[in-house]
Length: 177
Image (tube, rainbow, N blue to C red; front, side):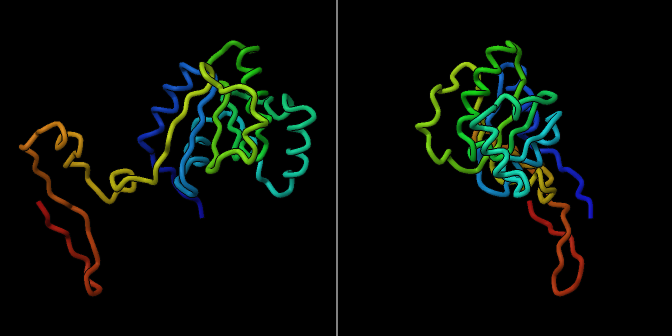
């Protein structure tokens, strides 16, 4: 069963950050879509947590990290935190290549040992926090009512839900204003 990608609000943010920085780190809770979203933008992929290559990847991150970083850019390094030494190797490659948009990093946890990271990444890495899919992104909201407009003081907001729901086995339209 093939899933169709649902565009996310963060898609354009990742692209804009890649245009300005060497790498973008996308953080967020497990299963919020970080990897799937980053795969839409990336030109090559390294999955650090692939069970068939995990030990090899971890060894290579220690011995020759630049080998793991080679590939078409932007290169997605998924679950990068499994090999924290990759951080400094990426920082070095960003400086050496002197071009934006080199890497996209995804991960849902903090590196196991941050003492292995020598450089903060300032000036080379951009950080983005990804949240779970919004109701608008999932198609469960029409987007007629915008929370930003409410917070900006717009009181002339009107919307109607045209979504369908099942009530007692019957397909009905939800009417709310």
